[in-house]
Length: 357
Image: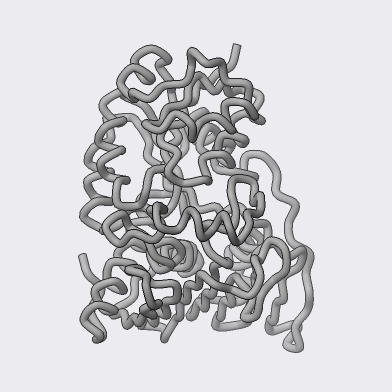
């Protein structure tokens, strides 16, 4: 019998399909139920993962009461992360929330407070499972580039409606049809490229910087005609060690999983004794070090279980009674959220602000 029972609740974010696939492929997992207030949004996953009709719910109370999962995968709109955590946590379950942490730091803290004793909350950042970035972290841990002093991040894609689960491409007609109704383009639901992507950079950046916090933050965003959210943001964070930059973009020339756009999507990490270029989806990283100042291309690590995906990792932590660490941890994700909150306010006030808390 499977060791772990998992439910997928709220399909606002198409990443639910990816996370359910990780659960389906895990040998010790049974997907016991799916739940969404709009039943049609579950159809594709139900068919793909052979979920019986009597395990599909539109009422989360019935879903969790009748199927009793150990772990709930949550993918609501960003502005509803706290609301949904507070709904689900009383069922005494572990929760994996799809990125970002929340729309605000206050909502992130509500999520932490809602969890029951002994139950874990993890925030999944898909970039955390990319082999280049895992390899970069290993090299940092090994002292390859000395102390990290700067992180430069540029990331995004053509836009959130151009692809579905498993990066299935949509048409321009699909995008135009869905845009008016999509939460991604609604300010009151946490839409916009900044809230969609900045947390990736600030959270993994904080991981690379070993938990260091910036002193102050300066941010600017675009104002696309006819839209109430941004599609491009640039954030500069000032640390004791210098300046780091985090840039988000909906509207890259190509999606990075098909063809890397220019600028390339990913990270450039500067250390006291070297540098690392770690770009999304690439099979090599570029490293300068004291011993190889001209730089060298190194193959990325081949990731092994339990570091291939968030379901593997979280269940392994629970089985081994180990704390959730790195970008999925509440501590690192909270610092990332602090920077995001400060950036949002900085962009609104058009001035540099000290890190908010």
